[in-house]
Length: 377
Image (cartoon, rainbow, N blue to C red; front, side, top):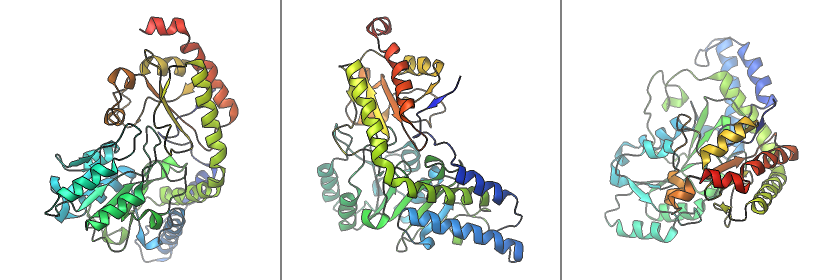
């Protein structure tokens, strides 16, 4: 049975450009820190990829620091400013990925969001205004939510943050490759990226650090990545990241077609289940993400039935050891628990075609039939 893959927010299929680039890189021997010819040749590949990743987010190559993924990038951003590591000095939004929530110190300030999933800017302004001692020195707000796809007003958040004299970190892992990302326009001081979300390999990411941020290494070793991240660079993975970045940037012009497929999916769901609730639908979202719930139709039932039909989707974040747990994102949005436990996330990507949407709808229609709802209740 062939699988219809609609879980791109968990990970995207590896792009052929990345596979080819990595296969070629794996045939090359040399440590990028070595000064001999083979080492310099490997270093050249790493630096070429650094330029390719930088171009995807309008950064300078000197601002790209490769990591093992988005999680490490987030930990470096939130832990690399030793003077700003106390709970009261860091503020993060309530809907951040667990990689940010766990990287932030326990008891850090939480920025609330509204029912549409957007950061409450008025509440954030009040938080900064009440911070008379200027303790808040670092703010972390994601660009696009991994569960709902809601895009945050990062440029406005950056304006407020900088007016307070603080730095802004932005987890852009879900956004890059799905919508244009420009670190200069956003005004962020640091930006986290991950290769596998845009069709690159798993196990490699980057932190973009503007030149004015006095970040320090939290993983020391041989001084790699200009002293900010110790450990021999994952050259094949980095090369694959660069190749995927080029391909993703080339395809950004096609995001409208992806949004059309997503909207077609949501319209069909609304016809099949008029009581369906769509999360974040009234504000700007990633073009590939649909998150919805049908009251009484629990996530676990949907996931199991769809999996048996060869349809791969999720109930939210895929980073919780394969567990289906209640979403902290939906809870922060004020969604009732009995609705949140029915949430289903469908996320599209570079290989998605109209036939995939039709296959999902055919399988889901059988699950959402009225007699199925009665049994689920």
